[in-house]
Amino acid sequence: MTSMRGRVAALLGAVAVVAGSALSAPPAGFAVAAGVPGVDGGITGQAPCPEAPGFICGTLTVPFDRSGAVPGTLGLRVALTGNSAAPRGDLLFLTGGPGQPGASAIERMAGKLEPLLKDYRLVMFDQRGTGQGALQCPGLQEDMGSSDLAVPRRQSIADCAAALGPDARHYSTADTVADIDLLRRALGARKLTLDGVSYGSFVAQRYALAHPTRVARLVLDSVVPQQGFDPLDLAALPATARVLRAACRATGCTTDPAADLAATVRRYGNGARILSALTGYEFVDPDYGGVPEILHEAAAGRPEKLLEFFEFVHLEVDAAPAEELSQGLHSAALCADSRFPWGTTDTPVDSRPAALERTRERLTAEQTWPYDAATATGLGSMLVCLHWPREQVPPAPHRRKLPNVPVLLLGGDRDISTPYELLYEQAESMHHPQIVIVPGAAHSVQNRADNPAGRQAVYDFLLR
Image 1 (cartoon, rainbow, N blue to C red):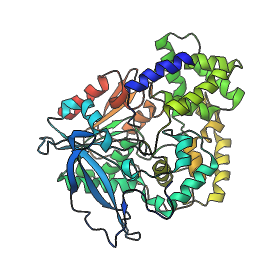
Image 2 (image 1 turned 60 degrees about the vertical axis):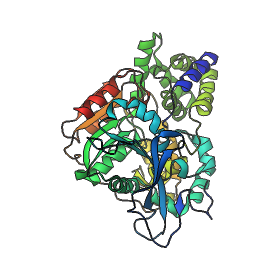
Image 3 (image 1 turned 135 degrees about the vertical axis):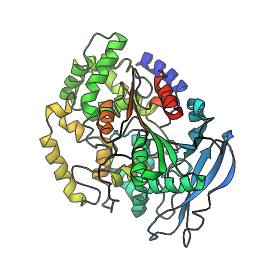
């Protein structure tokens, strides 16, 4: 592990990640009020961003509960370039998670998207519950950090749900979509061009479905399906074999990492932990350097380096404060948005485990190899929502084609988190989509890939 630690420390230095509230106090950024004043007041307090003075920051005020049952507003931080008269209008870049902030990343993303900035005004914002207004769940944050899949302690889930209380249901994607339309109005834009990465691609699609006449173009990077994430991760499980074998060929390793992974899971029953570690590690090393050797030794009954790998990813890769990725927001949004083997979060808690067990019994080896059924039903986000308190959830839109606007779908062939199989599946719900798969790239192509082909595809697409 010494050589791996040194190699990844260098990678972490070069690649930035654009990855509990007390019951008696509202979330940060929450202002108690008798009504919802000022929600049509534009972006207020505009001034140079303290951490990036070349950009403008301000606040968008949105209603906390659009039904009016819970009074008050949220102040969402917005960052933008100064070219308000950009000929092609506003490009809203949506970060992932759910739980990542946006405003603090504008300088980095402006660098990545620099060829577009004469034609577009770049806009980023902190979706509700993120950034300076991050929902705080310390135990869950410690257990999961920036991971979707790390298995948290049961007490951490309970503490988070208790801290957020019934207000958790106001942090769904439907709320964020409504916030974006207020942002559009505050910007004075008739239409938005949306560029979403990972969860941001899901938000972009949901916005397009809710406001089809308000979208000019869509860039969907590391695509999450419009119906939401699959809590069983049945695309990522078999895709792991393809990805690890491709990385092995590229680096000249001499083993079969997929077969060794399957043997390791059979021997130790640790599939969920392996998948979590791999999806964290891909962010900093799309070649998965050292992983085939670790899996080969574990398959042969020598798991010591694998255990070190788990600890390394948890402490050095996945560790993140709530201000970088809020696990409180992550849990609140996924549990409100998603469909599970037991139904939705409106399903009684006591009936959920039996439904999950029935699903586990029906899963086949073909669906889960090189993992097993216990992996699919034992992933972290699934377990958080298994134990999340019952709450009313917003209705999900029926799956249908996105509006007939230009769409670019961007993926990497080394991405386990959102494998390109999902991208091709989503393309069926779009009119004449353009698809670009970048060799050697993992998750978040525009932000992280060494290969510039993905960013060039975005430039060509948005400037044509």
